Structure formats: structure tokens, C-alpha cells
Image (cartoon, rainbow, N blue to C red):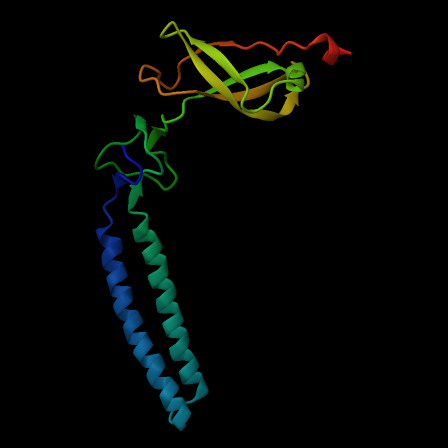
Length: 193
């Protein structure tokens, strides 16, 4: 799917009809509030009546805003281009708020997660190039370090690293596994002293 494509659309006819009703009520409340403001200026109504008309308008506006937000959530659009990994619900199925609908994957940048010895953070940095051999394809691909974890595991003395495949390879799929091929830079005798 492309970014912005409609992934899911809910049946929101009831909420749309409620929004129409509340919008009409808001128009009536607006006219009443305007009329009471003019009548108050002439002394024809009390301050309480004018305030009540304004409060009715505020309540109708709040109801309209609430329904507008609800109706805006009737369609789920793709936040990025990608693929559907798995669907958890089917058409015509009722779902609860917060229930996962599908798993979507951004396959534009294939990320790799792995751990390295914590001693490596002395030389490993963002942008460091390395290779990864994927078990499923039996091929080696170029990659670069994109992030290094902020916390070292004190028991295993390791740190989590995230890399990204450097290039586009159609045969690569999310969930594949492989072996990282990374070497520490060689220090010259002068640097070691």
C-alpha cells in the first residue's frame, strides 16, 4: 500500500447522522445566543438568559467537536508505504476500541537488531559499515549502524545495536535472520601508545 491509502473504513453512518443533528442544533443555539446578546443590550432579557443561551451554544459546539473527532476516526489511512503483515479482523466484524486490526510493515528500510559486546562501543559508531549474511537467501548484504542502545546490560556486558540494510534487495523480507560480519578497526602502533 502507498502512504495515505485507506487501510480500514468503519461503518459510521450513525455517528455522521448524529453530527448532522448536532450541527443543526448548534445553528439554532448560535441564532438564540446572537438574539439574546442583542436583546440584552436593549434591556429586553436578563443577563442570566443571555448567559444560558451562550452556554447552550458552547454545549452544542462541544458536542459537534466530539462527533467530528469520532467521525474523523472512521477511516484508518496508512502512515507510510508498506505491506500488510497480518490481518487480525475481517470485514463486518465488530471490534473494541484499541483492538489491533492489522500488523503493517514499513519495508522501505530493512532494519537489523543485534547485540554486541559492550567493549565495542569504544569504536563502534553510527554509520559504521558492516556485512550481514542472511540464512534464508545464503547471500551477504551491506549494512550500516543506525543506532546504538543507550543502556549496557550489566550481566551479559552487551549493548543492543540497530543497523539498516544499505540498498534495496527484493528478496529480503521482515523477520529473516542472519549473521553479522563486523571487524574492529585496526589500530596503528602509534595510536595504541
